[in-house]
Amino acid sequence: MNDDLLPESTRDQGAVTEAEKLSAGESGWYVDTRCTNCDVARQLAPELIRETAGRSEMIRQPRNGAEARRLHAAAFACPVRSIRPSGRRLDDALDPFPLALDDDVHLCGHNSPRTAGANSYLLRRPSGTVMMIDTPRWSSTLATRYEELGSVTDVLLTHRDHAAHGRRYADRFGARLWIHADDLDAAPDADHVLRGTDPVEIGEGVTAHPLPGHTRGSVLYIADERYCFSGDSLYWSRTTADLEVAESVTWYSIEELGASLVRTADRLHFEWLLPGHGDRKRLPAREMTTRMKQLTARVQMLRPRPIDFTAMRY
Image 1 (cartoon, helix red, strand yellow):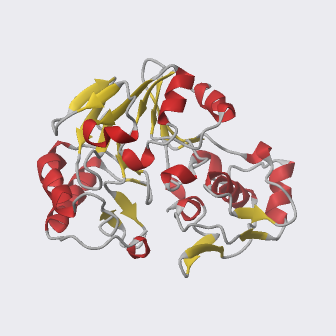
Image 2 (spheres, one colour):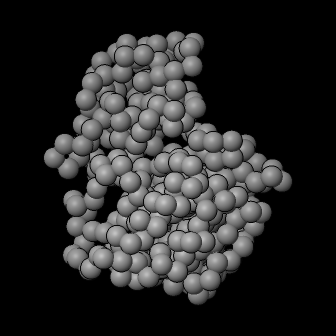
């Protein structure tokens, strides 16, 4: 990820706290054997953590305050807490989440092992309210922290794999829980159920686009023709430097995903791609449109294959 795409609070902004100076100067950070290779840490600190033999490992220790902030973001996002400073606990004062990605979008962090370590987001609306897209690990303390951004009115689930904690967060916030009917068994007590494949406007500037493929009930959400919350339907790959689909981890039908993209791609206008798994990316809307057309053509050529998590191209 380029430095200008890193969250504002992880960039080098000059003065750093004493705790950051300490963590930047200490050695001993490591990734333990619990790592599930979910890629979250590598998204947040790519210059410090890499993939080796199917798991993350430290490349080197942080050298300055900016790198210390990025490493702490990776550590607090890690769903299994496998990124650790040797001989000491993580300092909660250095937990950066929720982390601003843009004026209206925050990364929740604290990814949950019950969603395979998926990213989740908070979307602020012009009225001052907030929508949560997919869910972090459950914590009443985190819920209170997220509410500081505004009253959370809706919890939007992209598909069944990310439904864990949805009801609990919705009840905590007094919010409405959304899911598609074809994944309803993962959240049978949802308040709003999307049906069919037609786009549905569900709130201030937010449209749900059903996109069966990764799962039968997969949905992506477009906000303000600026943000695309894609769940596991598509993501940005650092390996190919392009939009990709999780071809090797498609639970329902890769052919149906191709058909969904043919039906939907021309309706999707956005600058920010914000997936559950895989990297985030911001590009001019026109370039995103071109890349979406190219992705659609590539996916139409794909055929079913066995599930293989090791074949993912993050």
